[in-house]
Image (tube, rainbow, N blue to C red):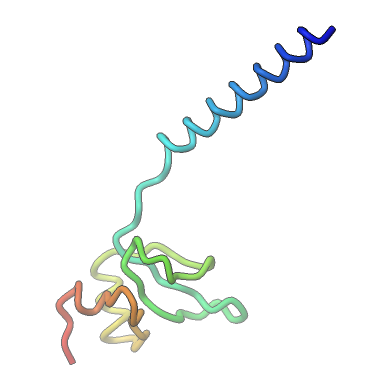
Length: 92
């Protein structure tokens, strides 16, 4: 009886480890640019570099041209931490 319990526990742990490894290896690629959206309204709040940890949970992936347009034409502010405007060579 104890041996069966131990075997089930080992099988469950091995399954969990296999699932974690699968998630780690099949993680989606990091986007180049992120548009952070306001939680209440859904309007653009700020532009971030793709791996910025300061971006909120409500975000949308944008391409380089889209990020440049958001910063220059639409007037969306750049994140003061990751400085996407500097990375895009935008100077005011």
